[in-house]
Length: 422
Ligand code: 5CA
Ligand code: ZN
Image 1 (tube, helix red, strand yellow):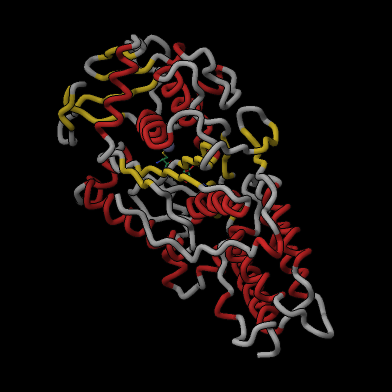
Image 2 (image 1 turned 60 degrees about the vertical axis):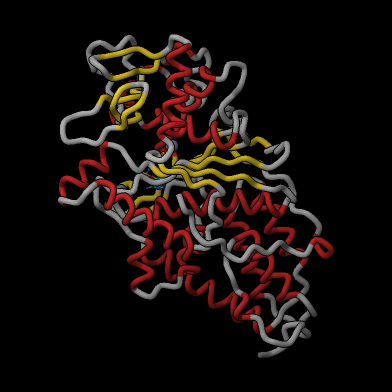
């Protein structure tokens, strides 16, 4: 499906500051910081939205975090190939649609459009492929058919299940023991207790059409795909296997990322699904994880409608390390708004040599996306008092803040080069 408009894509002047260092990220699978080593274009898959409600700041934090990955790779000199899905058919979408008396497809289209608008406002670089589950059904069915051919798919009353024990590495993405797996599987959309399954952890790959629900007529029968196999198929189809990074929020480590990896690896023997797995910590509000089902949402679109500068929203999200679990509050936004004003003033006024700040920003981001340290480096540059502003310093700051952090200060540069008093 259509994605959204590309924000200004600057790269910081290489002749002045060279390339950014290689990006290292904390990998859920190894539990260590691992340097990413793209071979050809850097290949990224990030789990997209289920469009039954508007983008909240937890979602926004996830997509801004992986936008930093895209930007860090670009600044290090890599081309990037980025794929993101939209779960535009699934239980929560059908439930919400019937609760509000709207068709599931109209609901999905409306919320997906709101998401595009939010991403565009937040200057998130769009994925190269933005693939809906519905439009991807042929690709998903093809993967399920290959798994079935390998004898690792079985029927339970017309629904098809994937045998998780067929992947000898099952469990390595999350590193969880069986008991916590069983608990999480039940909490996060799984059905450990369904009679007829061979292993309680086996996951649904194809659900036969139910009364009043949509179904697609395929070689597997008339029905719809399960959730995990959707991402396994979309990612491996558009990126191949052994791609550089699988991303999403930490609520997806198990079962979602464990299952997608297993399904792809069994269908493609001798490969790994992704070479590394990174996760954004859950952002909460009012004491709980922000979630559509709990209803404690702060919406990006609502803040924008209230007149909040989207760059301030983005700076507020960047003020926390992506792996941290944190709670949104009004003060976070106030701090970000003041920061944006201080940076804009400094850029207009001029400042000291910027090369050290640029190097600090890039080194911080390359070391597991330490955005708070990157912000601190720009704060330090902006607050340094100088006698004579250095020629070209504001331009370099503007270029780095835009290229690495995705915040445009362009309009705050004075017309004259060298950043003299406006
Ligand atoms: N469609 C699936 C992924 S294939 C899904 O999880 N959709 S979602 O709409 O529930 O979430 C979209 C993305 O935002 C996922 O990567 C999810 O992990 C992340 N996310 C959801 N809630 C939060 C939160 N409170 N904080 C941070 N990230 C979140
Ligand atoms: Zn996914």
